[in-house]
Structures are given as C-alpha cells and as structure tokens.
Image 1 (tube, helix red, strand yellow):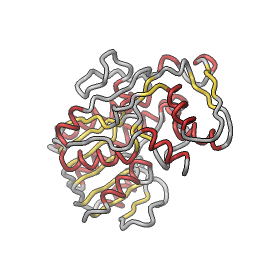
Image 2 (tube, one colour):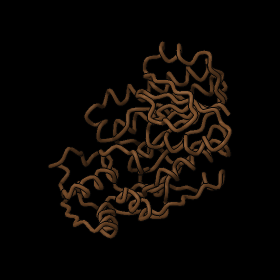
Image 3 (cartoon, one colour):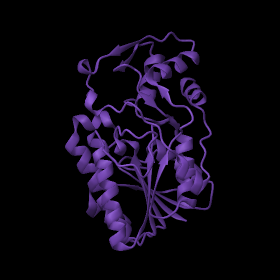
Image 4 (cartoon, one colour):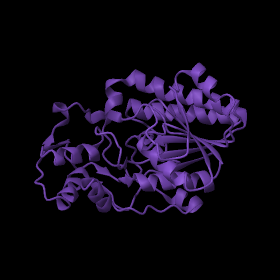
Length: 303
C-alpha cells in the first residue's frame, strides 16, 4: 500500500511509521521540518502544507492509496494565544490535503481530529454520534476541518475516516502538554502547578495504542465513519495523576493548585470530564488499548 503521512515527525506519526514499516508498505512522509526518522525506508518530502504550489510541485507525479493527515497547529493552550493562526492553519492545511488527494487519485483519507471537538457536553462518556460544541479555537478548527473534509469527499466521491484522539501521550510529545510537562519538572526537581481544583477527569492513551488503533482503522474501519481513539479503562483526575507519578519515582514531588483567574488558562474553555466511548472502534476493528497508565508513566520517568 502507498501511504502518505502528513506531520510524520510528530509523536503519533513516528509511531504509525514504526508499525507500517513492518509490512510491505511504501511510506511517503510529509513534514514542515527536516527528516528525523533516519532508520526507516521512507520517501521524505519537506514542505509546508500551506504552500500549495510547492506541495503540488513535489507530489504531483505521485500516487497514494491512503493519506493519513496528522499535520496541523497543535494544542489548546497554544491556540488560545494564536486563535486565528490555529484556525487558518488547521482548516487551510486540510483544504490543501483534500485538493492533493484528488490530484494524486488517492482512494481514502484518514483525518486526525481531536476529542476537543466535543467540548464539555453533558452526555458522558463521549460517543461519535454526540453533538459537538467545542470550547477552544483548536476544537473549532478541528471540527471545521472535519466538516470540510466530509463535504469534499461527498462531492468528489472519495472515502474518509475520521479519528478523534483522546489525550494521547508518550515519547517525543511537546513539553507544553500536561504529562511531559509534569515529568520534565519532576526531573528538574521543580514544583508542579495544577490549574483549577485538580478534579478534572481525563483518560490518557499511550501513543503506541493510538498508533495501533490508527492502523486498525486504516485496515478494518468502515468508510466514511468517525472513530474515537483512546483508553477509557483508567479515567483519572489531575490530582491522582500526580499521585501515580509520585508512586513511580523516588523524587519528592510538590504541587500547588492555581486558580484559573491567576493562570493563563480560562475556566470557560476548560473541559472537566473527558472519557471516550470506544464501543464503535472495538466493534468495527477489534481495538483494545494495551498499555496501562502506570506502565506508560514509568517508562517516561525512566527515559
């Protein structure tokens, strides 16, 4: 299978490549930055997705069976500072990928969306059929890109699969996300800060499981469907996340609660409960997460 992965240098992209390279796939990687995956047999394309003319000049003679579109402006906190850039980047990047898919006669698109599209809806856990009410510019941009992609595919008779990732963590994640941020501070013997009450509930999914789920959706997922991807077996509050970290390091960990009004975060955009319903992906693909939160955190602490 000929597969193009956008955002290939990112945390999820790296792990998808590791899994795909074990089979007889021809992997094309597209990223804004230089190739960091030197140990794999890849066709590497360094290009900004927003530069459509350069994108087409580098790929027009290629043909893909599938595009896995991971690239984009990442992070709720970062998007709060640069709302317009976030929305323009994620939406225009997806527009350009969809145009590319048509030109390269791609058979299907897999789009990496986010649990942020749901917002803080009352119905829990979140199902793919639930109404979406994103609370951040990042969530709005992801939902807008989903909507555009579905409309484009319908008009041009292409197939799509949308994956909504829930709190993925692991090696190579940027340090402005909660788990790598906490672990970095612990290793530097610095105190942790938790915004709000610390009772916010999350379901963290190790990147290996997220990548494995993506491959299952690629191979077994039904066309023109949306899938939640995460680990719903260990929902945990931010306070208890710190307790698990304490349990798995000899270092002393101190933390403080910071009111939202004294932080760079807004209570209005905070999501207080986020757990995925995974019935659909389990039924369609057999996906089951394998890595416990404690195991994943222990590996990162010892890295």
